[in-house]
Amino acid sequence: MLVEARINDLLAKMVEGWRCGDGVLFAQPFSMDARFVAFDGSVHNGPDEISVFHQKAFDTVLKGTSLDLIVTDIRQIDQKTWLVFAKGWHRLSNAPNNQRRAESVNIFVCKTEAANAEILAFQNTRVRPITDQGSAELWKAFDTAWETRKPTNAERLS
Image (cartoon, rainbow, N blue to C red; front, side):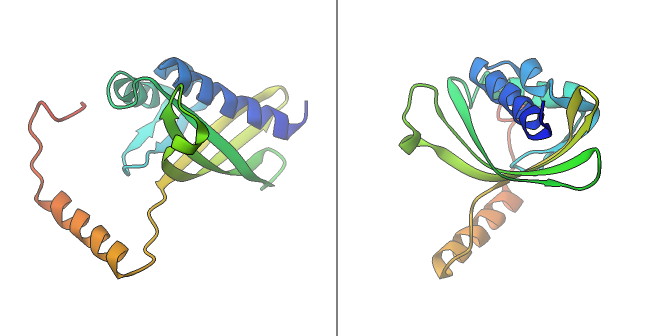
């Protein structure tokens, strides 16, 4: 099987795990020492942490959603290492593509050896470009609000 097909199989397993609301299935493609940087800047190490983080979201704020992931480029770094660039969104599972939300850009570092392939690292960045004064002010306002926020115990996911 071509390397690109093996990488696409890894990503398809993540997408399937999301669709099923199954954190364990979602995390299966990740290596034991994988580092997952989520859209919110939180860092999760290894499939166990990645699974727990996602299961909490699948059971609450992402319940009933699907992940759309489009690979935009795959670049070989060395014989076994690949950079994968993608765009991603989520939407309600039965909603059409034009109802996608939360556009993100993603970078995966994948390793392939013999018949095995796994994800070593992942970076997810929400698309929120600063294109004008209004968007710059919105970023600043959010940062200010975040700095002064004091979540209650009930609001915390962990």
